[in-house]
Length: 287
Image (cartoon, rainbow, N blue to C red; front, top):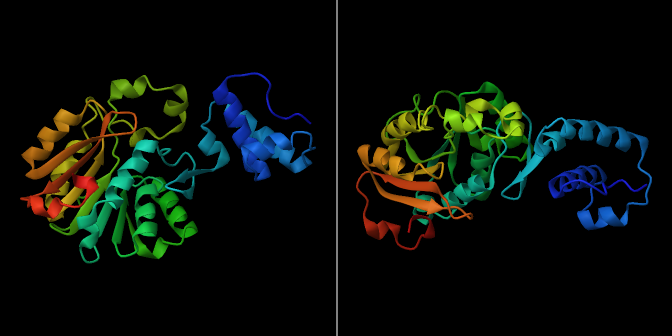
């Protein structure tokens, strides 16, 4: 049976190939080599159901039920935002921050953890850390717990439902990482239908200027971080100057705006309090 589409856009064809590869547990090359095979009835029914969901505009990651982040498989459904490549870059920045990991058992909070991709990836790569995953949405937090359990790190991450860092004591953290909602409401209204209708608005819509969550997050991070602690943020490409001003107002120093692989300023690193430049030597993450 020739089960791959002869027509349609490249994105459509690629998505359908992913569906078949996922069902048959094979790569794309092997998939093409197996086109003459007859699919078992159960596989045909599953693929047909997934194709209907895909045709209705549901994101491929939700249809497949998983996505790969930093090389690890994460359960994926509509309870949480689909992670983008920039968030992997943010996680890589944290992992490459040498002075952070030289501290004894650094306490690290992921604010707005969603499905838990960032904090779980950190826990897998750096078992010496102490990790806290925070989300306002109990459904997203439940998904993060499921992923932590599946990947074997549930016992090393504390999960907390709450509003940003409000519940944390002062000067209790070595680092805060966040991919908060930073899309302005007007920009959210212009996003593709697939995103607006399927991904949680709570994780995307940052209010009139995209900074309604970012402002209190920065204020609370300034209180919760120990002197010299790190703040890592993912932002929208046009928000760099505003973020620099907000961070400076809260006594953050060594503010660095980094470009993503597409060349846009999407990643921010800053440190709380007065920082000695000598402490930054030898780390690509902080210049």
